[in-house]
Length: 242
Picture (spheres, rainbow, N blue to C red):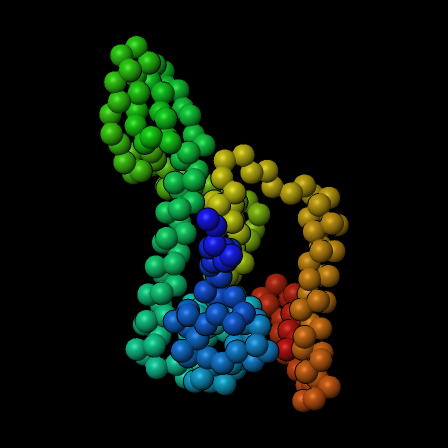
């Protein structure tokens, strides 16, 4: 005899975990030191200098760590908070670098003159004739002098292009090198036409979009434009607006 009731299992569809930096989810340690201005995680007000930082909690942590990475350093952050944030952003960068290297290794399949091939997915050298594998480490993948060779090539580019040496301190240069490394082997730089036409127009459009946020604030707080100018030793004039 069957009962009138039915046994039904309460099955709920699991929700994918939200990013710790997503709107409404403030588990990132950086949120202990700032306030979400718009409620969507995109603008963070610093608890120490009251500056409103664009770009979310990622850039805000660099603001506290005073790294100058796409953010203006906080002038009032306590030393212990600065040290903590420096460790946080450094650990995050190390983890990202390690993950990127492992990903790149899985795409490598190198044959050398001795008949050995390297299968990166298993992280071993295999001899084609014997099939024997030898455990290796990431450090063995790079020749000892590679770093010096790359540095020398960067320096040569600066010298032959008459680029001022202080340009190497530009955060955009550091970011460029990082993005090229992430892209991996095979990256081709933009053409002469691309960099003077298409990419230049895109940069102008990006700047115009970034300015829209500030223009909205101008309606409430006003706007002051200041300028400064000087002439270098070669007689070339420079003018800066801010």
